[in-house]
Amino acid sequence: MSKEISKQISVLELFQKLFHNFNARQMKDATVAFKKHLDAGGKMLVAMGGAMSSAQLGVTLAPMIKEGKVHAISCTGANLEESVFRLVAHNSYKDYPNYRYFTKEDDEAILNRGERRVTDTSIPEEETFRVVEPIILKYWKEAEKNGERFFPHEYFYKILLLDELKDKYEGNPEHCWLLEAAKKNLPIVVPGWEDSTLGNIFAGYCKVGEASPMIMKTGVEYMMYLYDQYQELSLSHSPTGEAKDGPGLGFFQIGGGISGDFPICVVPSIKYDLKKPVRPWGYFCQISDSTTSYGSYSGATPNEKITWDKLTKDTPMFVIESDATIVAPLIFEAILNRYIITEK
Image (tube, rainbow, N blue to C red; front, side, top):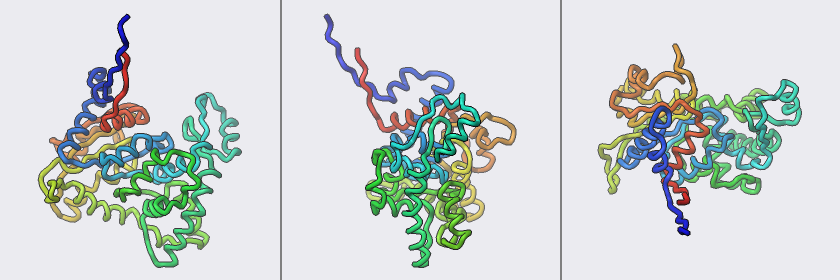
């Protein structure tokens, strides 16, 4: 009888073995180009739309940040807060695998239980919004008292770094991408933050006079902040810290919408509005299931962005028309050079 031998194979090697055509090849080629970009000294911005934090992308995104594979984030207000919600209320989330067969009455019952459904997952109101709300309100009021102003993500950074929530953790802290970002003071932009649960709550406090809108930096200020961050991150540096030529900052987009539209505009804005020289994006990949159609930005092919001076004809470009909840974790695992065991 022959002895069974365990053999290790990396996720990237698995890609190269199995994925040769169509969307599978796009995923493989995009991953190889992502790795090549980093290996050449480039940096990467991840733009995150949809409900990726609720889908627990942090399991792979947090290690990407920790290991220096991601250098900036653009995300919706929902993805920002839901990274924390998963951390403090993980055990209270409920799964609804049979959601396709729900009636309106079924969803009304979910509402009455204080749950908020996102496809097959519920976000528990009392254990998430209402746990974080009084803590973040304290910092909003403190900023008003001191005449200070911060970006939305900076309030979360304060709460996480000061361990305000540590005794409430239910999820694995190593799976919270925002906690890892806070530790590194990672540049983040959150365009349209008020379109989120805590953004709505903040607006309500402002309306009744319990908080001041002046304490919250705005989307315009996020773009001003991004001007500086982009110009710094698009530089490559030698081991001695000197600036040198390199591949620049890449753009890895998950989903569509404002989290992608907002940051990609920084290049033409620096060029035409600030009238300053700027290097183009060094890499572009979008994972999207949006149908390419007339007038659709999320479904537009990357070469359309050449006409807006966001990308160039030389930018490595990829569109993976698939489910980001499957594709993004696989790509991140491959970039992290994770290994799996196969039996032979």
